[in-house]
Image (cartoon, rainbow, N blue to C red; front, side):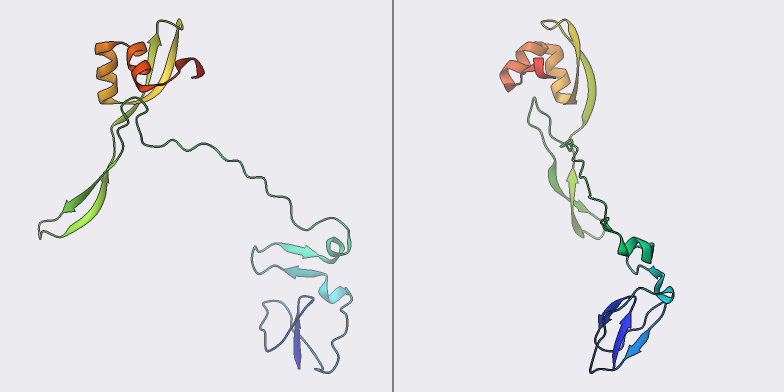
Length: 149
């Protein structure tokens, strides 16, 4: 005996949440869409699919469009500071790995050469360096073109 569930022929005992039909093992007939199989519950997504949608030429799945957005990395572009791996030490001296992240801040800084504000994500060390030396000097040393931002 072969078990046919929701219009798909399978071998072996299959338990379906909807209906299970048994057919002789010798000949597996081609399934016709009938009123008994009008609605099929999808096991994966829980969507009901009707037989009218199965017979049409329209695709069952909608093309998936990936929208990749840039991920803001936790690295300061001016100083190159990034996270540090460290041990978290408990009272019993048990050590577990942890990350110590850089203190990054979103800062709007006036750029004198461009006569406008530039919004940057900087470490606090870079902010202090910019206040001391100026935005143009620090950007030139880091090799950053501010006209793009």
